[in-house]
Structures are given as structure tokens and as C-alpha cells.
Image (cartoon, rainbow over all chains, first blue to last red; front, side):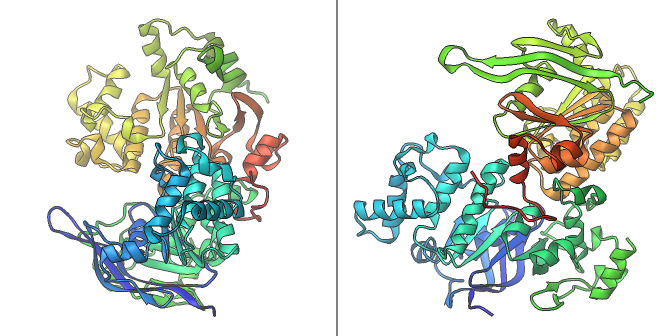
Length: 335
Length: 271
């Protein structure tokens, strides 16, 4: 077992709406990511993936509030820190975040190198222009980006190139953890592959030590990350290695999600696409029992009453369901 | 084959040029095709390959620079507004962005009511209209009674896209052009929407043209696939021919770039 880089214990965060209602978008989430490993988070829109990403940074601003739990990055507690303090000492150095529209962060009136200078100077005011330029050029070349990008304006770059540039800049201070939230979903397949290649390079070349990758595209997660975690209505419902989660899911929701995979391969034609009926529950008033019970075709009456805890199923494999492993497998076999 | 397939939509030498002089861009370059009735066709290409320009020409939203489009074997004539509206009874579209597909001032029942009117049902009794709308909504798993007093923007993206399908259900066009219908919604709702579209197609026997960059989707739904590069069709055929055994280097590259789960995804051949 490697060294644990990112550890989250029972993290709960909430949104407070205009009408002073609490919405627990991340509900008692615990996870661990070891050195050199990456974790993928899957789930449908609105299940709390992106809120979890924001919460992990420890950088809370209304309407998102921290409620309870711990976030530990390489032995350092960052939960409950002052947001200003987090911004100065944690973001960019310990943990970096790439949102979906990262490319829009580039200022159209400034050259890329000015942007790099801003990032570096924010953490190290004494750095000279030449040092920063050399560092940036080295880093860009190391990651396979042409160094002349630095002297260009954002509008001169294509979408894929902009995205990769922003990723390169966001890891320039060598953060320990990188959180990538749908970094490639606005791009076409070729640019997407380049972005993925770059993220893999970051891991392989040791620039970052652990990565959290969020997307609803399961084939992508399967290819990028070591482990996959499935979220539903703010809770973790399943975690396992990429292979287990895709080909042998335990939780009925994960099973349904895997049934919606579309890939251009021969195997696909034999698989019937399955869609999960219904919509996720309203998190203002989460259901008492299992949150998936309403949409689950295997649900029993007690599923709606008993709230289920996470169960272990082998090393690194957990799931949240009232049924046992063998019962679930039996149910899937019979359809 | 004993039964001869009926030609639905075809084109000869279809070309669209934007700009002139230095900025001259040939978006669609001398394209020929014939789509048959009841077929599901996918047009696949990267961003900027001319897919959307082609679809706009097929819909009659922009004029072709050169070439001809034939509808049901006849040369299409949509120069007058009346002919155009007649043509739109036969060809309908679902667009990528459901949020901008609706008139934000119209409530949902008036969106559906317009479809009934377009099919010549304007004089039907009110109960009959409501029944038709209810049927259309239940086809796409929406509850009509919950929707009547709502505006389109009060729905989620997936719900809006389903309402779009309910419109098609009422309009019963000969051709449905779906321009990236699922690229803005998540994978789970994607399966639902594809299932609905395919069921609807069976029910009213329309031709469906998917414009997409999602090769997996093209492989899953279509009877024939056209690969588009720089405004030209570089390869076409059945999905098995084109996607499992591609011949052109462009198609090979495109397919190589899609993440796989049954085979190894080769990351080394990038860029």
C-alpha cells in the first residue's frame, strides 16, 4: 500500500438556498487516494460530482458551506481553514482544479506568458520574469506543448490547445493533487485524446501525485483512472477498480449506468442499452431509506425505510445496498 | 432485394461556399448522397467538417451555392415561403441545444398546440387536442398535467429534449434531422432519448438523419454511416463496414481517438 496523498473523512457540505433551505449535495463522503493513483468519479448530472470537487479544495464560498468532516492532503488538514488562507497556501500548490470551461480562464487581451506570471507571482512574488519564462518553457516542452504558445494570445489557439495550456499552467507549481472536472467534454475526440494523454503524462512524469477525474463518460474513466467511484444523490454508492466498476458493478444504479455505455466496438451490438427510469430525488427532502429505491427495479419495501451503510466487498471494493453481493449477482443474472 | 427501396432525400453536387476572395471557405464540397425511406443515417465528422452546414441546407435554412437537393425523387423547390412551410411539414429537426430551441414566451401547451395546428388539426375539439397532447407527452414519459402551465426553461435539459421528441410525435414528419441531439445531456439520459427516438421511428416509419461526432452512437443506431472530412464524404457504408473495418486513414484516426472498453485504447498515436 502506497502513501495516502488525499484522504477525505465523512465530508458533508451543503448549499443554502434563497429560501434558507439546506441542500446536502455531498453527504458523508469518505475516500482515499494513494500516491501515483487516480480516482474517477461518475454519476449523472446533479448527483454532486462537481460539488464534491469544489468541496475537496476546501475553498468554500456562498451558497456552498462546509458542514463537517476532514480533508487531509499529504498529512495536512485543510478543512475548516479560512477561505483566504486556502487560496494563498493551498490552491495551486497542494491542490489544483480544472473545470470544464478552463479555457475561458485565459484573458484575451494578454499573452499566455503574462498569465503564467500572474499565477507564479501570486505564490512567489519575488520570481523574476526570466525565471518564470524559463520555467514555463521547460514545463511546456516537457509536456509536449510547443513553447511558442507562451508568446501567443488566447484567440490564436484552438480549443484543445487552450485547454491543454490551462492544464499546463495550473500544474506549474507542482500541486500534489489535481482535480479535473469534465476537462474534455467540450472538445472533439481528437482534442479529447490529447488532453487525456497530457493528464496521463502528468501522472507518469510525477508532476502530480494523485488525480481525481470527474466525468459522466464511463469509457473515458475506464481508460484514464485506476479506480472508479459512482455517486448518486450526494452519496457514494460504489467504489472499485476501473475494471470491476465497468464490467462487474454491484450497486443497481452503477449497473444501470454501465448499461448506458456506447462505444464503437463489436461487443456493443450484443449489449442492449438500458436506461434508468425516473429522475434523481430532490435533495431538499432526501428520501428516508435508500436514495435509489424509487428507481430501482430490485427494491423491496424495506429499502425505502432502512438507510443503508457502505459495505465492504473485497479489497478496495465498497458498495451501498441492502442486498448482499451474491443476492445482487443472482438478481442481475435473472434480469 | 425484392422490394425496391424508395428514395427519400438525395443530392447531387451539393456545395456551399461562405465568403469570397481571401476568406472564401468551401464548407460543403460537391457532395452526392441518396437516403432511402425508413433508414437511419449518421453523418459523422469532427468540429468544422461541415456537418451542420449540410444539415442547414437539407432543412432549407440556408441556400445551397451549387447543386440540387431532391425530395421524394422530385427536385426540391422552396423559393416561396408557402413551399418552404409545406416542406417543413415533411422535415423536422432536433438540435443540440434544447435551451435555445424553444420560444421562451410560449408555454409548453402552446408549443404542442402549434404542432397540432401545423398538421391541420386546428379545428379539432379542445378535448381531442388535449388528448393528443397527453398521448404525445406520455410517449416521452412526461406528465402533461404537470407541464401545462410551465415555460420551457422550467424544465431540465433532458426533459426539454424529450419534449422535442413529443413535438415530432405530433408532427409525424417524413424525415427527422437530429443535429447532435444528445451531446449536451449525460450518458444516462442519452440512452433514454435514443430509445425514444428509435421507438418513434418504428411507429411512424420516418427517416432519421443523425448528425454527430459520437462514433459510438453512430455505430449503435444507424443503418448507414457517412464520414465527413473538410466538406466531403470520405467514406460511407454500413456501420460494420465503416466503423469496424475502416479503409480511409481519416476514419481510422477518428475511430482510434474514441475511448474503448473492450480493447486496448492506444494513447501513443496522438496528434
